[in-house]
Length: 300
Image (cartoon, rainbow, N blue to C red; front, top):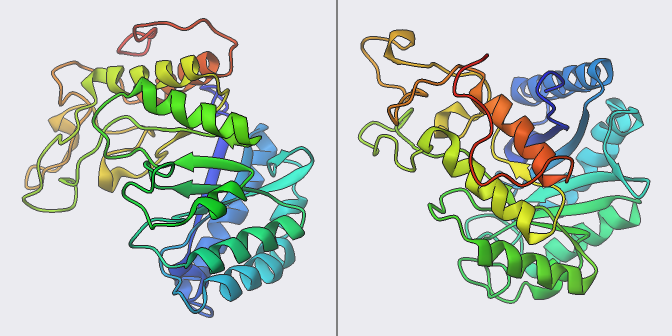
């Protein structure tokens, strides 16, 4: 991340991990996040905790998230004490992913209770919400007050095969009018085929980086100055920007994996790290908006 100019990472913490007290999975999650803190401090990157509320239930969402934040994140691990822990306006950042998403837990009352609890603890609260959050399209109905309580809204965009300038513009305009911040989600491409047999291969093509780049251009044009790139290392959904196999010579002969040359262009394994760094500069305003991908396909 330091080498390629990527600011930092949201460290996912799943509800299914949090409720597994005493289990190896939670211990592993804690160890990984402690190592990420150490690396962030060493290399001058930022990080913050992102609770994916998958695995919580309607009954324990509020209590278990509160306990984990108090007992582990700010308690045992003391992650928010790190100079690398991201802050906004002096407040430690926390994200709740899945607020208002139909197949995730939480009523509007419990979600609002949890958001307000984090704010009472001095946190800056982001939520990952449905793409159609402004109109309740694809989300739970009646969550307007919940979204309005957030410091920042981050609508999930993975799976949307279109680059929709109007979507970014309208999201930004409404949040700016509400005095809230906006963090749109952009991603390189998508496919389930890396782990679901029979799923379409190269389902949402990367187009040799152009798909993600055009999203980044739309974000830069809408007026916000940050974006959430999904995801850093999620190889199973073929959304990873971390180094990946460049061609079939690098994958098993008896198993299919999506490779970076799937669209017919040879790319170096670090291509999407370099692209993410270029997108960061364009979105934060330190580089001009470029209508075309500004980096070479292979490492110079």
